Image (tube, helix red, strand yellow):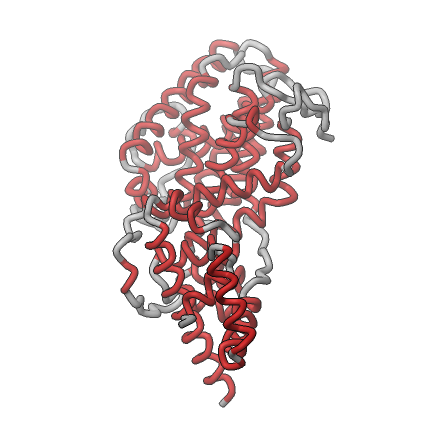
Length: 179
Length: 244
């Protein structure tokens, strides 16, 4: 049984463990939406946990520990994605082919629902990151720009293109299912 | 002219107050634009609800170990776990078990220590090159975290403390089984078999009649294997994962 005792207001080891038990699935799912890669998503959560622990003196008790870690994990995911060899800042105009489901994609489909997950696979990394951070994580545009180290205008353009593509792709899917 | 892009920024509340007012007025006087906006809202709204699927147990365990390790190593740490009485290094066992089991397995697999005391006890003859090529990189990266933290800790292992040694060994066995299971889940049956073969050694180490010098020799061997494994992982983790 873990104690919930606190020391100088800092979140405790037990509270971190409880947060992992309660919200680990959600952190992972959120990171997976960005990375589309289970390994990167798991690494992002791990990095976030370590970062949160090391910075726990910055945690304000008015906030939820789970939410705070979630935010840090979402910060970490694009950073790891940017380091991945496949990520490209210049891929805004690139229509990616639907190359078939890989294991990670299958997991992503479970997370996002078949239609949206499939559509997200057609976006570039940049478009997907901007869309997920804006639409699902509800970040501000300037926050996304800061985190991805790009301009706000670039974020906007990526978001515009992502939504346009998703609407077209999902409309096509609906049409094909109607017949 | 209110464009689709402007409507999107309106939806996300990313317009200035003046721009928002312009869009609001346009929506009020233009039914076609209002219908377009309603459709946009409807579509975007359907993309909100995303259920979360459970994360794999071995991944969650890795996260938990990360916090446990950080709590042990941080100066001025805040450790509030009130568990049943445990030896001071019980948590260490979690790390060491994973590290040692995989480290030895891979070290042996690389056939760089074929004459070592440990590897000679593990029946590895049936392991073929490239037979475990499907081990995910995340599995290897998780091990690297364990290795880096454990290398320092293992040197202080109190092998002369019989009760402590037994407790630690039981931890090692528990963790060995955990990683054995993880290897199976990672489509690495041969690695799982190596880990399984390692268990008899741990059981021997857990016996109460082992001489302190033998225990010390074993500890040194483990430390050596740990260093080998760390070096391999640090230089080419992905390649190593593919050559297990």
